[in-house]
Image 1: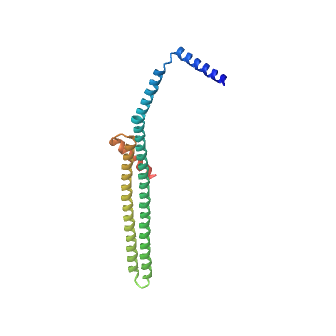
Image 2: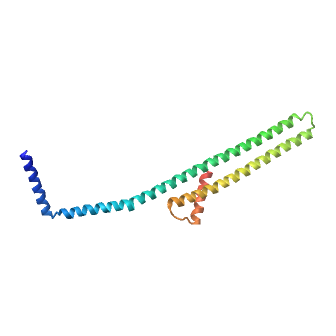
Image 3: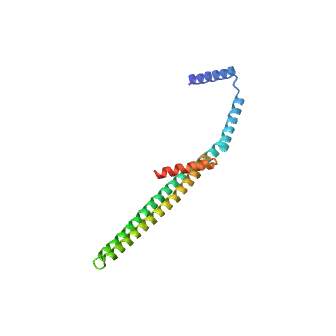
Amino acid sequence: MSIAILAAESFADMARETGETFGFNVWLFLSQVISFTIVALLLRAFAYKPIQKVLEERRQRIEEGQLNAEKIRQQLAEAEQRHAEILAKANEQAQKMIDEARQSAGVLADRKQQEAVAAAEQIMAKAREASAIEHERTMSDLKRELGRLVVETTAKVTGKVLTPDDQKRLQEEANRQLAS
């Protein structure tokens, strides 16, 4: 045990001599440790936490933008489905009218049959036209909304105000991607 005590004393003497050689001051060292701790705590409170908050808000905005884009995709799919349903219904009705006209062909003269077929085709043409107009209107609304959301999301994510030229360019890019 005495060897261990001697070794410890020898180490302590050596440390003290090294400290004296290099000008080590315990009070100066402790004041620097305390200063560093205070600066670290201030940086954590006034720099790190606000930066973390800003990053979290930005992440949430990006997530909202992605949710909005997904919602627009769903609305577009629903609009296309409605378009297909309207077209199918119109085709079904037109086919039904054509079939009825053919059944009554034996009873009615050829002239009456031609009038019924013409009316059915006219209804089918009108239904297709109405369906196409509805589809165009829906696509236009969705493109405009998608463009607005892209511009809004881009402005939020980048944190800057977009010029009208930037907004127009982003809307056109979104419309091109939506069309392809």
